[in-house]
Length: 253
Image (cartoon, rainbow, N blue to C red):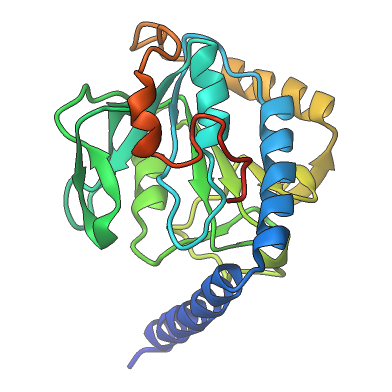
């Protein structure tokens, strides 16, 4: 075995072990701790990122006790933003994104994670990306499939990538490889960081908002590929489908 291949094999084994440990720690978080951290993350997201009304955002359905970003998505949709969920198009292919709203037709995909069935395919301007781990350069430890890295690399211009995790998931390095793509921002309960100069730079909400707008302008975003959402018109009966989504519970449940 060549030295480079052995090194990559070792790195993959290390990442797998780190991923398993971090996911186990997240799943084992006490409910009160998870709720408090989630509430703080929600506040950071909604205060720091003022999404344009004509923007298309991508988010992921919460999995294995990840932060539930749907509460923030609700707030942005009420302002006209269009939401999408990722769909796995095939092995080793970039993700596709289909429009989502509460009550949209859904199917179950990998790990029984739901995704929209037959709704419009859209290119996101901003992607909120869950992270099992992250490092001091803004690189993300996901689930090992490489789908988000592949998607960010294949999309031009790439959406702004906002990684979301709990603070304990921070690592000195995930040992990034040429195919890894860093986040543009990292958000935890401890605050918001911009990835600049190959390192995390902590910012206030106002500073983050300024940087966020600068990056949107630089990349020519939003693409304006979708009409603004018409707010929250889904009937209340869908609240049973998404417990806590319509405000019965605070983020973190």
